[in-house]
Length: 482
Ligand code: NAD
Image 1: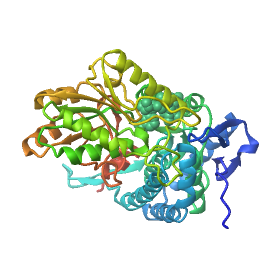
Image 2: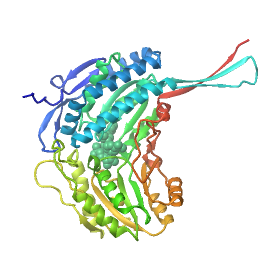
Image 3: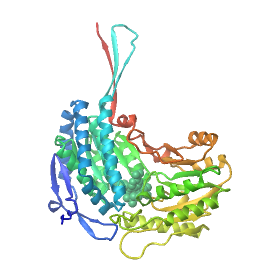
Image 4: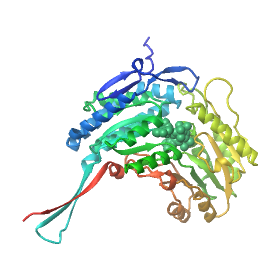
């Protein structure tokens, strides 16, 4: 019988050296499916932070001059290693993050594609030649790496989110100090081990863990750190953005959304209801792009709601390692409490709890797929991102009304439109205030497409040809040649 591998060895990674949990204070990592302790995560001391900053600064002076072709080779090698080790990475990701194993695999394989995309695309960080006014002058524009980057990544897609930031930074010639969320650390440690194995020089990538506030403040205030990239909630994004502004640091902010879903009367209701049920259940709704405010045309609202609830009833909630499970637990207790609060508030202001809504008794952070109807716009859930498996459904009558509802919040990340009408499609895709609109399907977050938000949902994009903009500076060179 083959031996079951133990859960990941968690570590810091500083100047090319791994520092294990036995050498530092830290926190316990919990399995959200049963509440058991999986391991201990070491926290960086101040001297570790200083070492990480010094090594990233030193490494930048070499790495920035390594050709994009060579930088790309490392990213390609990492992609190969990711695919080779996918089984162990995905298993540990399910253990500490909670998502079903099939979703964990999808996250891991998708990340390999991101590494490859960045490996190819970094060879095309082009400049340009501007026609001069004087024939003896040559005017060129070049793009150069910004320097040492501090990257803060979340717990919902820990592997993928870390990979995106690391590969954009390394691909453009920057070095990185990565501080991921402590809730689901195994996949990030595994990823950093793959970069080490792929031959990334020491200092180009450093991994630190510990209290978020202490570490982010320390890194943002350090002069050597030139760029901040954060994925997480709007309030923390604003806090880090304000601090970065004080020190005139560049930022990329991928923040929360509250994605409107507009289901028009002419949509294919059977298909739309079934599709949205599966999409919403992905990662138990803990996705910044998850469909989350459902506006359904009044003529089809009843039919849609019944079919959506019927589709939800086919979901199997359980431990992500069980092959039958299609929706795992929430990653932490905070999310279960947030779901309970949103549901009880909605009911208190007059919404109907049409299905789900009651937390699971016993160990694990489970919450069932839940549907609320007749939800007043004043309910908390119509204004705060649920980041969990709760869906509020309300109705609209006209396209204008649907667009007004969609655009009513300060968020603007993903949005969804379901219609067969070319006219409605055109009005909605152009009229919705969001960084991404997906019509009749989910087509977001591919390596070759930009992911980013407008309004409070963030600044800048990751992926697509835009991916290096945030990690490079523009330099204009004017030369008198004769
Ligand atoms: P939170 O607001 O405390 O933290 C959000 C994220 O920011 C976490 O990953 C956390 O580790 C990190 N963080 C917190 N304080 C930080 C600091 N001072 N410096 C650097 N990083 C810091 O909330 P939470 O309970 O961890 O997550 C729930 C909320 O976060 C959700 O409601 C959702 O809006 C948001 N979120 C968004 C994404 C996304 O992909 N945009 C991912 C995870 C969480």
